Amino acid sequence: MASSQTGRRKSTRKVIVLLFFVASIGLFFPAFSPLPAVSSSRPHRHSIKSPAEKKNLQDEAPRFEILHDKFWKDNEPFQIIGGDVHYFRIPPEVEKWWSMLLPKIVPLLYNNGGPVIMVQIENEYGSFGDDKSYLHSLVKLARQHVGDDVILYTTDGGTRETLDKGTIRGADVFSAVDFSTGENPWPIFELQKKYNAPGKSPPLSSEFYTGWLTHWGEKMAKTDAKWTAAALDNILSRNASVVLYMAHGGTNFGFYSGANTGQISADYKPDLTSYDYDAPIQESGDVDNPKYKALRSVIKRYSRYQLPPVPANNVKKAYGRVKMERVTSLFGVLNMVSEPKDGAQSDQPVPMESFGKVLGFCLYVSNFQPKERPIILSIPKVHDRAQIFMLCQTTGYASGPAYVGTIERWLNRNITLPHITCSSSVSLFILVENMGRVNYGQFLYDKKGILSSVLLDGSPLRGWKIFPISFDHITNILFTNPIAHIAHPLVRKSNKMVLKETEDDPLKGPAFHVGQFVINETDQVKDTYISFRGWSKGVCFVNGFNLGRYWPSVGPQCSLYVPAPILKHGENTVVLLELEQANLEHVITFVSGPDFTCGPTRATSTT
Image 1 (spheres, one colour):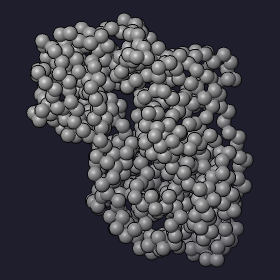
Image 2: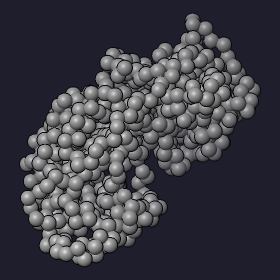
Image 3: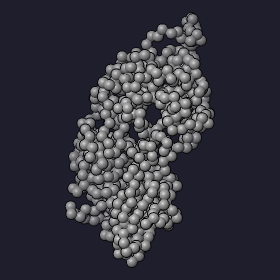
Image 4: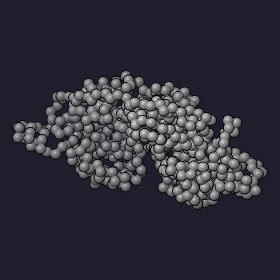
């Protein structure tokens, strides 16, 4: 695992991270603890020579600082033992974002009596950037909001190249490091000193990898608990500080999953909806596992506080099978889910960000004149996955636009559009899914949608209508009149809402499916999982909450985690946007545990 970590990095990039001085993270362990007795003396200016001086010192404001290559909290040497929890990517407009965020943090700074001891201004920037003026601008912006007393810091990989590019020399910004778990930390901590002012370099591994992430189509990443614990012990045993990445990974709910790339943008690897990460606190919050116990045992040896009791795992409930009904195609409610509802016109395709759309889906529609032979369709640059459909506006198809193929960013290929007899123009529908933004490396500026011309037999197709799609109110939309929606004019001639399908003639393409189930007792509202075995690819909403993507045909994730607060006593509603082909029984199953054994990888389940 250590070697693989050097080749690919975590997917969710932190632009700002706050370290909190708290008694515990959840019920896991103390986030910070004082150092054991040390032989070095405290700085002279903190010496206490009389009870009166001691009282005066206690009356001073709280203070967290770096001196003599140690962290100090209120005049006592301090060792950080912390953990990251799951966070979401923030917008790229740093100044706008920080102007909203940092004023809320100021009352929470430690020197103001709150829990925040340090503020991170950049994360692993040296791995893909080298602009000191940019870094200095972040420092200036942060100082305008948080003042001069709080510690600002950066984190970079433990190499000269990354530290040269990602750090700011001098005493104003502390430089922390990260490195592969199991790697010898002490030469890296010595290197860290070269990028901090003399006496200002307490050894800090700000990302100690407890596991690793998994992309769609891969086997679930696992790391050995004893091996991970031994690596942690190696750091803590000599009074170095550490922050676990991740303490709790959690879930990429909605469309907030990230992605990685290789050396080229097309080598694109989207993350699973689950961000379990093989972390000590599992996706559902459970801690009864070997890694939690092993890491807790190590932390207990170095903490001067008594650790809180180990909590029990959350109770899970298998609610069983729920019958789903196909209500309408996505095209059937296009005018109700697109913003603007009539689309936006453009001569050439443009990215979805042009319409303020940063997540989810965007539909591109144009027309062309049919030929007496098949036509070759190519899209040189699409981010990230495009499903292609055709519709003759004269005759149409009973089920709406007909599916003809898929183009993927990581497997771009030409599509042959079949010859159809049509006395009018043929409408071309291209539904593009943003599978997750690249969060690390040189391709961070990751625009989504169709980023090139669409070519028919090598010639650009012009005259597009573009429909940014929103699912914010999809449950209400489908239950307003689930049978007889008014179709968008582009597909109205062929629209038939509720259609029957058989095993020999299944309906394909993006369609909404609705199901309901009842929880009869309040005390039966529990965490659960939805199994999507037999379904293809799509998005799931429970009581209007977007759980995220499912893709069991690729795997390894077969099920989605449903936290109890999303459910309710009484009737609960599930809506699926199935993009390809539904389970032939039209059934989903609520089960009591996660399943990561789908797809060709056949990875090992966590249950």
